Length: 309
Image (cartoon, rainbow, N blue to C red):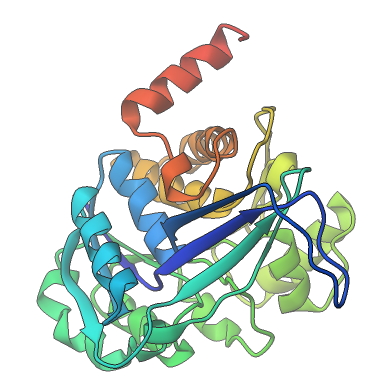
């Protein structure tokens, strides 16, 4: 069973702060780290760390960051034959600010990610048709996302669309072609222009999208767990309570784990519960990809939960 991730990569520039500086103010921050990130790359790495066979379609710049990203994919066992270098272009970067409450603020500069184009889907056709699942996000040109969805539908490949970062003009008819649509509550608010400040409000906003034809809507709620909605059912997935250190990349950990677990047995509830736990495990460590446990570490984490540690 093979997963294709068509999407972004970024270099995470993570600054841990006590507080954000005011306009014109300079403050000293206690810690800084550089790591590999980007929503697409994060999701690919999470799935690969859990033992899934993963291929990545993305573009990097011809800078130091680009080759480092390719090396990182290779280290994780991810197929990089369709990770291409764009000449005279910077790689994508994401300055991330993490406060003492473990909450993050993120800026992204897409760089080479803007050059992942519909033609790249055509060029990878032979390999993509061997995949069982395609994962998409919105950090690359929207036309490429739509082309990937059309390709997957044509070849009967299941699709996860993570509408992040959310855009108001997303064509919901394309989302309805996907098997799973996975926003967080903020993205749900942007997509529906409806409040999401309570469970009832979230249900109402979700119903608006489902009424347009979505098959499976999964709303991630951070420390509040997640909700799986279909036209006829609502399932609440309870959160795993942990001491959060850094929430960066937690949503991507959730999606990568969900994808990895789902293609094994097509059991959505089981995959959602595993994803909730995997996401929780990731926030107990600093960074994005480096915080994602492999199978052995994840099993140890799950075992600690059953023991009540």
